[in-house]
Length: 326
Ligand SMILES: [Ca+2]
Image (cartoon, rainbow, N blue to C red; front, side, top):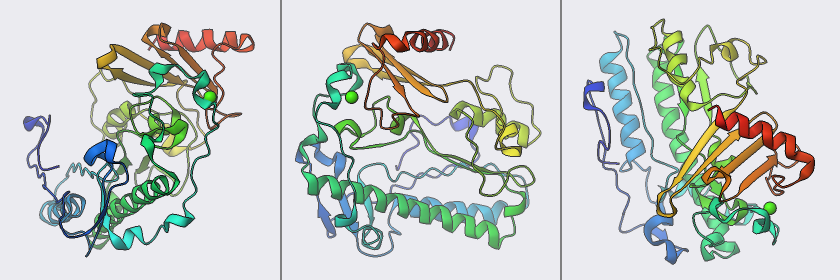
């Protein structure tokens, strides 16, 4: 927000980094998690949020669509929400009354079979009580809907300009988000809700509207997919694989596995995780700091770690082989 970060200037003809307003003064603000400082602030704004980064980024995208509509264009539009701090107009908070939010039910002994390295800290729920947790989920939903509304503004403009029919649209996120799973919030873990991201692709003439492909894909597959859709030659060095087969036929098989890696530099621990259609296997510091195996079909909440279960020894061996080959 407000800065180019590690962007590569040579890759862009035009950049725009709106500063937004993440610290509004006079709004309805509440902070239930004093231990986390500004990290989990929630702000319900007056007005339509037009002082916010995501709104201004959508405005700029709309302006560029008008200006550049005659020629092929690659537009990367980054939204910050629902990343913390959770700032959105009050009207979006009103969509999600706190009393209607259902919280994750975490068994008291859940962490007993999880290696300590799986968590950034031992803290459970950051000392939030039930009400604060409900408000946190509510703020996340409000911010997600606010961001979604900005996506909608841009798509509407594409329609108005009659560009939808020859535009490839991709919606994805850089990581998922924990909302109380295993007593954890935000990211920095290798459980399903954090490793998994949305990947929505509308490629006119190729993809089927509203279809869901169940095959495994990875974020690194985006580059070769876009290259193929645009009839461009991708470099041979790319790690990913085009998903165009799944766009054409959502029932087509995906990859054997997807990989995710997490660094805990302070503890000098790297966690590596592999997901197949049935299992997730994660090991910390090559297994020296523990391992986890979850049956995602029987146990989608990842509550029972099967890594030490003799009945799953073969599965563990297979998953280790996948990790070693990645
Ligand atoms: Ca458990």
